Amino acid sequence: MLREDGLLVQKFDKLLIANRGEIAMRILRAARELGIATVAVYSDADRNAPHVRFADEAYHIGPPPARESYLVVERLLDVARRSGAGAIHPGYGFLAEREAFAQACADAGIVFVGPPARAISIMGDKLMARATVKAAGVPVVPGTEPGQTDDEMAAAAGEMGFPVLVKAAAGGGGKGMRPVHRPEDLAGAFAAARRESKAAFGDDTVYIEKMITEARHIEIQLLADSHGNTIYLGERECSLQRRHQKLIEEAPSFVVDGELRRRMGEVAVAAARSVDYVNAGTIEFLVDRDRHFYFLEMNTRVQVEHPVTELVTGIDIVQEQLRIARGRRLRLRQKDVQINGWAIECRINAEDPYNNYLPSTGVITSVQLPTGPGVRVDTGVYEGNEITSYYDSMISKLICYGETRGEAVLRMRRALEEYRIMGVKTNIPFHQHMMESHRFLSGQFDTKFVEDRFSMEDRAAGHTLEAALLATLAAHEQSQRAAQIVAPGARDTSNWKWYSRWERLRR
Image 1: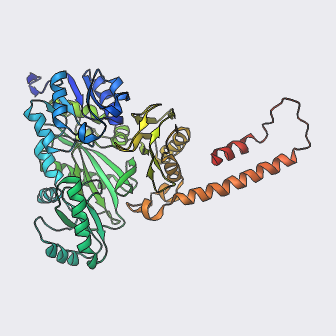
Image 2 (image 1 turned 90 degrees about the vertical axis):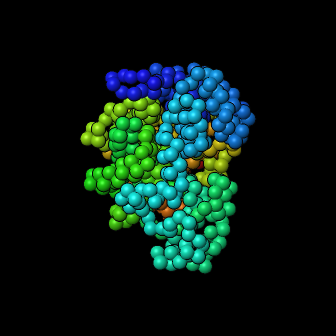
Image 3 (image 1 turned 120 degrees about the vertical axis):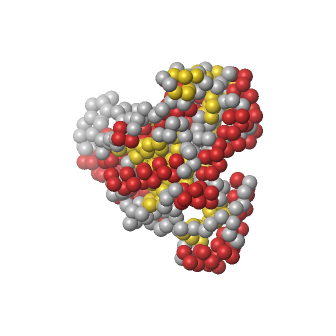
């Protein structure tokens, strides 16, 4: 600890990244630009991964299963000691929102690039988070209070009115969550949610929330320093989900105007201050069709979708995380934050959208990344990389920026067309279909749109018909030119546009 410009600063010049894949690469790049040396960790499966080659140092931490490598706290702390890393950035997933990991870092004298353990603890418990932010005046979805019995929760559900959601108090990512549309289904939902929550989080506590129908999922990005300054960086639209997993995000949101943005931002800041939050974090809200918004949860880490906010604000969120962790004051005040243009992010996953999104494993034999103005690809894979079942199926994030939403969509269409991945199936066709959807283009969607009103079969049927029509037109045009003489060896390109389009559809 030392003084710089009258401020108490936590000095570290070497950072350990306790993660893998694209987020490890993202953090490594941010650290390198700040002149911070980097330390990577890897399992047997990631021995040749880009983040291992890119870091200044790399240490092996175990076999492929995360529970034997990336989730072993003592191994990570041991690497930090051996390498001399003064700080650890957890990224997202793995240990990023584990109170015990943040506390273990503090006890070891290592800076945790994230919030204090207490904030993680409070916001990680859904019931405690609800109670805490509610006391701070933050609107919450109507629901039951901590410690209620099944009978009491059932009675509360009857008063709220169905449908309701049975939710795990320690849950996240849709685990331990069950929608209930009839009173007689409550008992089964309680039992199923408890089983799943116990297996995933070691805690089977559940509660009930009113289900907000036709809801949008809107989140507010926050930055908070250790000197009491907290600002919001606008909103992200995250409603396009499948099984509570986000697929496409954009900033700003189609349904949020300046006044609603201000109100949601101020409420998000109040929620963060209620737990003395420090570093980057996100408050997630549900917004109903009348634009009333309700606190859903807080993510006490950097979000997968942070790049869309970076592109429309010009603020490097990961670098700000590192500066805050060093004890620096925020360089921006709320009035300095401006939203310019539009950004859309598509999560490129190794899964088959034509086969119920079944995960796809195998070796990536070829990768061609899209480039050009306004296109950004955050990835951690390479040619020869094996996609296994040990880790998340996300291969990369494709982010496109435009001065308007329309320009961003057109740019995303072009980038998706350029993107080529061979060796595994991906959900690129899903994103292409979505970028052509009238409901998406007009902003008429909610959190249930992908599951209830969107089908890849429509795209397949449309392409089959389109391919047949194009092939027929091409054949007709060819017959009209059959009598023409073509010099030997010459290439007849008269039908090239038809043929090229038909070939792409056929593939």
